[in-house]
Length: 300
Image 1 (cartoon, rainbow, N blue to C red):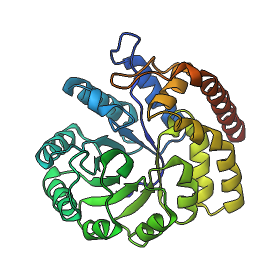
Image 2: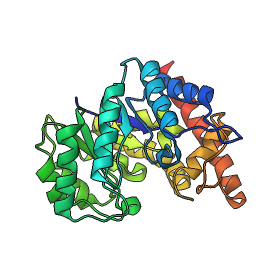
Image 3: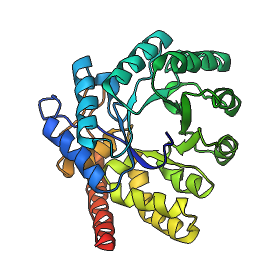
Image 4: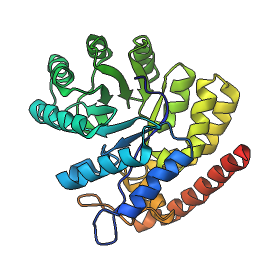
C-alpha cells in the first residue's frame, strides 16, 4: 500500500450535550468521499482521540470502514506514550480491518532516538497492519530525526511518515528516503503545497475537513508539478491555514465545521473558540464555501 494525495485527519463531531454526533460523523465521512479525498484518518489528534472511550473509538473506526467500503485507505490513530499500549491498540485496529495505523512519536515521555527506533520496530513487528510514522514535535515534545526515520524506513511494515516539521531542510532530508514501499507525507497544511512540489507524496491535512475539494485540488496541482497554479491556489487557501492556527487544533476547524452543520463543540480540556475569534471563524467559513463552490463549478 502506498499512501498519497489528499488525506484528511478527521475531526470527531459531538452533540451539544457532548455525545458523539453519529449522523454528523456519517455525513462528514460521506462529504469527504464526495469531494475526492484520497484517504481518511480516524481518531488522530484532530479527532480528539484522547477524549474518546473505547466503545466510541471502535464505533468511529468501524463506521468509517463501512461507509468507505474500500474506496480509499482508512487509517486509525494508535500512538500512545507506552510501547506496550501502542502495540495492543494497533493489534486491535488490525482486527477491525483498517488499512494502516498512524503511530505518533510517544508523547510526553521524550524518548531518545534509539528509544524511538526500538518503539516503532516493536509496534511494526507485532501489529499485523502497515504502520505510518508520525512526527509532530510541537505536540509530543520529541523530534524524530531523519537519521532515525532512515533506520526505520526499511522495515517491511513501515510504509511512510507523516512529517509535521515545517522546515525545508527537514522535508528535503526525508524526501531522500522515498521508495516504492515508503511514502513521505506532509503533516503541515501551510507548507504542504511546497512539500508536494518538492516531491512529497501527499499530505494528511486538518483544514481539508472544511475544504476537502479545495485541498484535493491543491494536491493535484502540486503533485502534477504545476508550480504557478499550485502556488496561486495555495495563496487562496492561506487565510484558512492562518485561521486553523489561531487556537490549538482542532478548535478552529471545529468552529467552521459547526457552521457547516457538522457537530457542536469539543471535549474538555479543549474549549470552544474564543468569542474574540468569532469574526475570523465566520470569514473562514465564507471563504471555505467559496473555495468549495469554485471546485464544484470546475468539476461540473
